[in-house]
Length: 157
Length: 157
DNA sequence: TATTGTTATACTCTATAACTATA
DNA sequence: TATAGTTATAGAGTATAACAATA
Image (tube, rainbow over all chains, first blue to last red):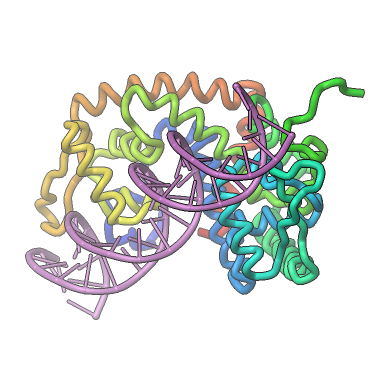
């Protein structure tokens, strides 16, 4: 039926059998996530933001004054990883750590004007990225997909 | 309304705003994938298999004789990463490399009887894992979810 | 005693380049 | 010239333990 030449490393890699993988949500999630991340990584490159940095900046911008531990908890990263992300943000002038007066162990993390500006530019491009990735879904389809994904990771922890 | 104590690192981490992240398929995919992977990693631990090793063994088992490059291409890993996975498989007696007679650059990769046995045991546990992760979805809901995820990563590359 | 921020360390993954042998 | 397998290396990301300051 097809007169296309198979890739040079055949035998049969075009008609391969993925066995149980086709029934595993984890494998399918992983493939989709990798594809979407390749695009968002390229999308954010002009602002020198990695995905974890972008998501951190979004949450800082939307929730001024959270502690580092609260940020780490919300984003499911280790406290020690959050330290490095915030070190870079402070060096770049995107966010600040302010000692919290009511609990001197804590830093209240705040976005700067420069951070806000960069966040808005990056978010605009992220919306274009989103249209590339999920634009073929109707809004009902996308809402259903997102709801089911959230059920997966909120079902337990 | 709630008399539960907030986590110690509040302010407000329970009612935090995720901003644009709630609309980004990539963020939601990532969270779901991390959650499912934590479970599959624990599930496969008794067989000392990481997720990438398990998926490789599945494809070798279902497609005997593929070259290393074909395997790498199918699973979207680098050829150089496949070398290491197969080194471990050979050391453990789970798979073999056989020189391909028709093209002496290639190795035909074959699963061993021990590899097949381990694969079947691990697959049985993977099915239990799948029920834990996606059991709350009806078969129609799961089929729709999987189809949409595949559309995301097959839409382009 | 427990939590917060920090540092150090180790381990896994990933990406890249270079090399050889084969085609 | 291009491909297959390999090696080496560097960069992310992640996980863990330990420490000082504070609660």
